[in-house]
Amino acid sequence: MDFFQELVEPYQETPLLFIVLEAIGVFFGLLSVLFSKRDNILVFPTGMISTLIFVYLLWYYQLLGDMLINSYYFIMSIYGWYVWTRKVDEALYIPITKASFKEWKTAIFLFVSSVLFTSMIYQLFQKWENWVSAIDIMTTAIFFTGMWLMAKKKIENWLFWIIGDLISIPLYYYKGLSLSSIQYFIFTIIAILAYQEWKKKLNQPQAQLLK
Image (cartoon, rainbow, N blue to C red; front, side):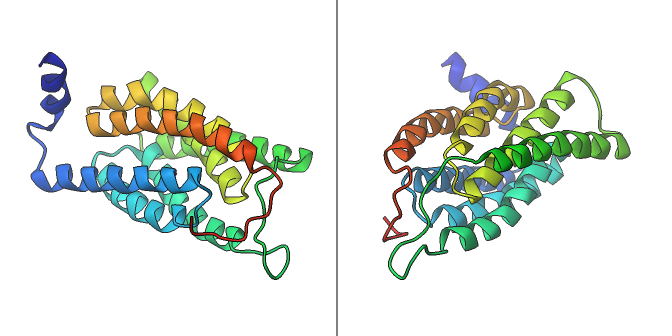
């Protein structure tokens, strides 16, 4: 009972519209991760619905780092949709692969650039408050990099999701977004399972994108 009270307490003064929107965003976010786990192209349209909702919600709550993450997710979903539909021949689509040395250098550059860019945004809009801002910036960089790797269909993307999700569980609960905190807990479990599943499909071109 105490847990349930703690769960709903942050929403007592929240407009019903925002509660409904968050629930819809969480639902489509979970669908997107499940589709990604299955190597299903529907990861992108479902993810785009979720990210659009959260861009609006996070703008309202002035969580700039998280808002940037979701805006970037939307853009990278368009790119990922294109990459995943490319074919290695007339019958098979590109396989899941490991990141090359060059791609790891790009990932590190993207991570560092994301930290610097998000820090500048916080400074520009005078939103730097406390340790939460610093963690928000770090998770932004982790998720930026993970999303790029996923769009490239690199198995290492799941390692970034796992780390970022684990950090986000207590962070979102602290921010008062309990549903999102639960979502990230579920995301962590799915990401671990997805990493194992993608390992089985490594370097195997797929004949279907809807599974």
